[in-house]
Length: 414
Image (cartoon, one colour):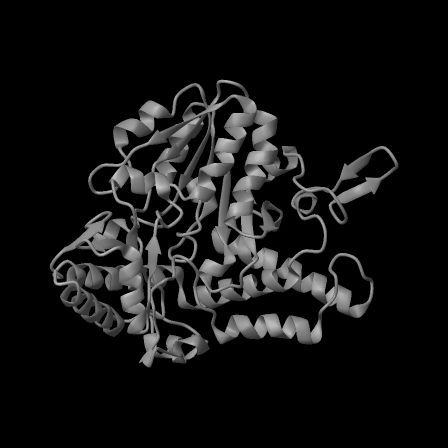
């Protein structure tokens, strides 16, 4: 594990990820599908293994030694995550399965209690399906309606529409911090001010930002924020819903059952305080512990270092890929305004065909609509290819990608 780094020691970091030693189709693995899920370092894998090997027990229940140790480890992980995103207290962190579940929790609890007929929910056209479908379901149920902020030719939210569409009828703005397709980093602090100006709340989908850049919920002044552990070196099946403490206290629970209750009688029940009233049943303790370890690993490197490294790598990749004949890229041209995501099309090669060709060279990219069909329709394309980077990727791997794209171009006689 990296102990401290003013700059990223890429060789040392790569040693921490056993999967990077894989050979795929006779070639060294080049993993450029990090926006879908990240790989896991030994530090995280060992933390999960240690839990199952040495302290596996159901938390918050047993008085025995293992139960106490498991509970301490689980709550310690909550504290690490809270600190990582700048929450005021650990009770503002609710463990969920993923960002998708966090968004659904907000929609089905706070939304049902607060969104009424003719209220407006404001989203952007670049949202992931996870930040569209729950609001569509809620709007259909309540009679509210949804409005979308559009983007300019650079893939940036239109400034005029931010203020125009967030108006007195708006009850909620739910916006991505960073687009999983365009890479665009949205000015969520400014959008939060606009939402609060009209008395609305703001939810931030930070699934693509928390793993890659410093995020502080207090500076952002968001009301809710969600992210997934598996995109930030942690395990699958664990995610986070951050909510301001009073909001969580005022919001009804999502799932009823064991552990979220204070008392249960034959005809009524009362709930625990937040966050526990949102964590019914046996939680993913191993996942939470693994996520806590992931925050430690990233903190040792430094999130500013992570962001600076990825921005440099993205700038290199954008320059190289722009020289490939027939390439069309989407999103901001300036790497300073985007995450380490490059979405593109090569001539008339279908994205799935291109991904298959690159896989022959051991390169893993994403192809399709990236769970952002409204954005694809807005851009007027059926699908795209996407290369996304993380702290273990290198410029040499980018060169391998460029070489494979050139091979595909020749193969299709572009």
